[in-house]
Length: 155
Image 1 (cartoon, one colour):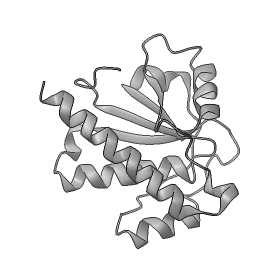
Image 2 (tube, helix red, strand yellow; image 1 turned 120 degrees about the vertical axis):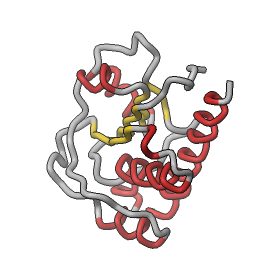
Image 3 (cartoon, rainbow, N blue to C red; image 1 turned 60 degrees about the vertical axis):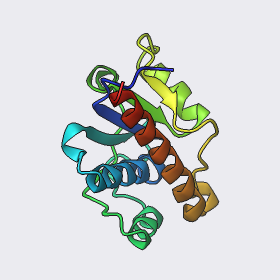
Image 4 (cartoon, rainbow, N blue to C red; image 1 turned 90 degrees about the vertical axis):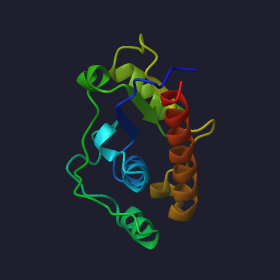
C-alpha cells in the first residue's frame, strides 16, 4: 500500500464528473472541515470522458448531499488530463473502468498514484438512479481514506 504520509492533493475521478466524483469531493471536503484540517489538503474531481464537460453536479447528487447536510460547492465537470498526474498525490477512480481510463490518460501509473476508491466498484447512479447507495459507498470510501491519512500522519 502507498505511504499516505505526504498526501496533500487528492483527485476523485468518475466517468462524467457529475455524480460520483463530485459527491466524493464534497463528502471528503466536509469530513476535512469537521476535523478542521481542510487547509492541509487540496481536493478536486474530474471525469475520464468528455460527455458532461461544463455541466453542474447532477440534481440527484445535489439532493443526497443536501439531505446529509453536506455543502455542494460550485462545480463544473471537467476531464482529467495528464497534467493532473503530476499535480495530485493520489488519483482515485470509482470503478475498474475509470481506473483503466485514468491510466490511459496518464500513459500509465509509474508512481503508483492511481487506485480504486473501494475494493469494489461504486455503482454509477446516472444509470441506477440509486443515489442513496452511491452515497453510502462514497461515505465509506471517504471514511476509510481519512483513517488511512490520519494513521499515516501519526507514523
